[in-house]
Image (cartoon, rainbow, N blue to C red; front, side, top):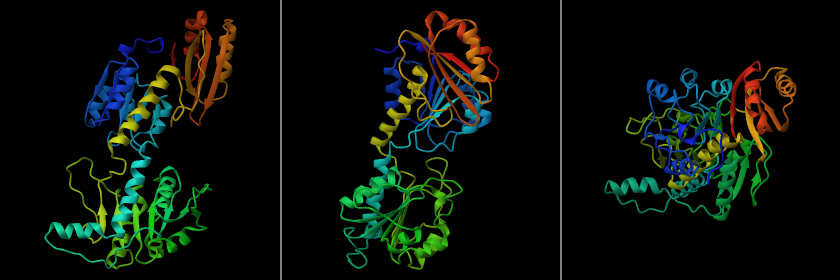
Amino acid sequence: MTSKTSFPRDKIKILLLEGINKTAVDVFRKAGYKNVVVYNKALDADALRAELADTHLLGIRSKTQLTEGVLDKAGKLLGVGCFCIGTNQVSLSAATARGVAVFNSPYSNTRSVAELVVANAILLLRRVYEKSVAAHSGKWLKDHRGCHEIRGKTIGIIGYGHIGSQVSVMAESLGMHVLYHDIESKLALGNAQAAHSLEALLTKSDIVTLHVPGGKSTRNLMDKKRIGQIKKGAVLLNLSRGDVVDIDAAAAALRAGLLGGMAADVFPAEPAAAGETFSSPLQGLANVILTPHIGGSTEEAQQNIGLDAAGKLVSFLESGQSTGSLTVPSLSLPVQQGAHRLLHIHRNVPGVLSEINSAISRHKMNILGQYLKTNEQIGYVVLDVERKASPRALAELRKVKHTIKVRTLY
């Protein structure tokens, strides 16, 4: 049975783009929302603007571009779910200024990426890929030279977050020694050891794998100098962000025999859609595995992402819970019985909360619960008021200066 809300569920339009997993549709339908529009592709800017004119919740993956201009046409939009890890495709500042809650699913594909890292490590140390290519062309390269077990080898993990730490656990279970380096102090799992510097990790590791976020601080983290510090014959894996490795420097090191192999799942420039031409300096090199950004592309990961992101959108719509939002300040809210819940999003300027409380007090309306959180741009206030006062309270909140969005939940 679905919870009571102040809005008819059949009036809420939910738009899902880019072939989002069916589990997301199931979450919305189970919650009572029938107006779910699904596209298996991204929409161009004009088509997207047209669809968003009456859309309340939007689900996207990495190809849809939510620019400020697009968001200007989305007057009814309350929340956006990025059914993936990244949110680079969304203008977060524009969404914040408009009080649109943006959620992502940063941990649902952790296992899928970690498994591919370990698989690539095994394939590279055994030189499986180049032997497979040779077999496909009719050559029989039955040769043990340069092929190694991963047991007893050292894996160096750069970035010890959710994915890096899971790689750590899996690698140790296969008999590997684990070194890790992170800019923040992280508790080691199992017998993993923190390297005292990035250079120390690079010089001691047989396998170097990257698990860092994108951005200015990590762009070309693995440049010519650092690639040159890697232990000769070691292999390099990048399943994080395409711009963290100087791809030309990596290709030169592979040709010179300094690197024993490489696996890359992400690239500085990637095709916008399946079927488009892909080009990289790493193509045609021996013992190099190239995959088309599929680290998290498993059925299990997509199902988990669908459940996670859709669940966050439903929770925000029905209870005002904003935990995990990258735009609306994060509030974890209790259930309040016998009350009506009002949400107020406003520009973060002095005096707004005082004006809200003055308006409520002036009309002698009883507040049963009040919750507030702000970020640099906006403030988010949730009010639980006695039911008989709800209509008047809503009207007063709309009058408050610097208001962006106001709505009643139940």
